[in-house]
Amino acid sequence: DAGVTQSPTHLIKTRGQQVTLRCSPKSGHDTVSWYQQALGQGPQFIFQYYEEEERQRGNFPDRFSGHQFPNYSSELNVNALLLGDSALYLCASSFNPSGGDTQYFGPGTRLTVL
Amino acid sequence: DAKTTQPPSMDCAEGRAANLPCNHSTISGNEYVYWYRQIHSQGPQYIIHGLKNNETNEMASLIITEDRKSSTLILPHATLRDTAVYYCIVYNAGNNRKLIWGLGTSLAVNP
Image 1 (cartoon, one colour):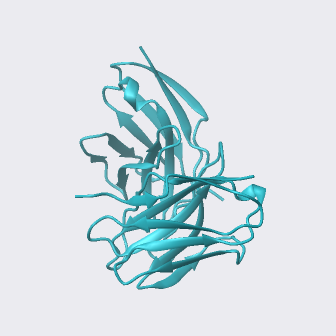
Image 2 (cartoon, rainbow over the protein chains, first blue to last red):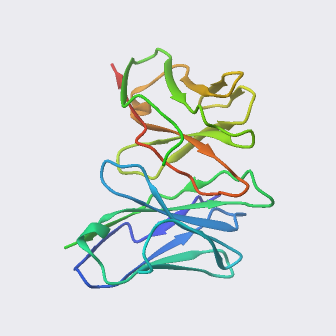
């Protein structure tokens, strides 16, 4: 049973560019959450997708957007990249019938903005 | 802000039990205590969670005080591979499904 997978593993971009990160959830999971983790900090919640809609959003600007596909996979898009967007981006999946859902994480995508 | 307080670092001898404390004095009745760990630059790994009762799985045991204001994660026989940052998180699976992370405890298991 494959766990949560993310691609790419590493990515280098320059300021002002746009980036798309991808996530495939664990088999049987229907909910995907995205987190940003700066060096030395705990992860920060970006947003969560369920039934192809953004269900909840953290304190991130509109430059951060996402999408969930019918197969439950998800993308995170970041426009107009800033140096401060350099971080480890984590995807977590869960199964959400009515709550009590444990989130399982992928290995992350390391984004470096130059 | 995170609803938990953890010591920034701890040491443990290999083969001994590692007891990691966590304070969550403002926890609500429907909030769970979750523990994750993160080995350097990898994705967080789920360890265990509980609501009121003590829990045990193949990785660890979770002891929650009766008033639920604190908990302890126990790794019964720590190995060098258990060296990681351990995060204690109070999680509301109802209204607020996001995990709010603090800085965790950096556990060093020494040979």
